[in-house]
Image (cartoon, rainbow, N blue to C red; front, side, top):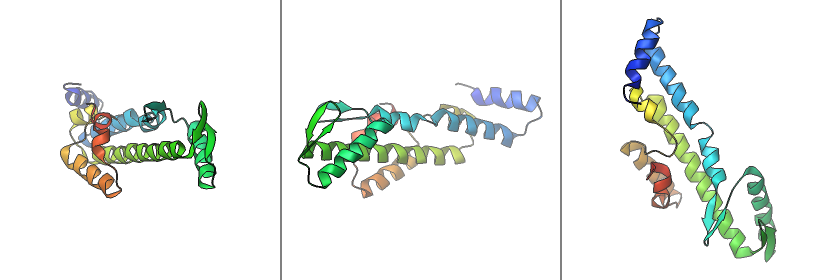
Length: 161
């Protein structure tokens, strides 16, 4: 990725492109790179009480149905590989919701960063799962904290650490 901006600029200028056009190309490449990675991160799932649960769209739908049954008074429901008690379903639902909020909010901040960054080499380095600049991470942490979500639980997933 080193010197990506210089190579891109040279190639585009040779073709008659302006500086704004080559920044736009770099932004679009960054957006394309992160596209779909938010969903993939959510689908990869969560761990609750030492058990991992993937969260494909079908599994999210099944979890929503299971949680609805619990909300209506069921003490246990079939989910995943067997019968789960109401407390477990509620814990899985809460963790899945929180993980989804973390991923989608982080993705939104990545998009904001991409929209304003003008350094093509920095744009080339942006990816889902890599740290945002401090100011964006602080805003992300403050927003999640205001929703009762402790970002430190997800720091490794959001910063590649």
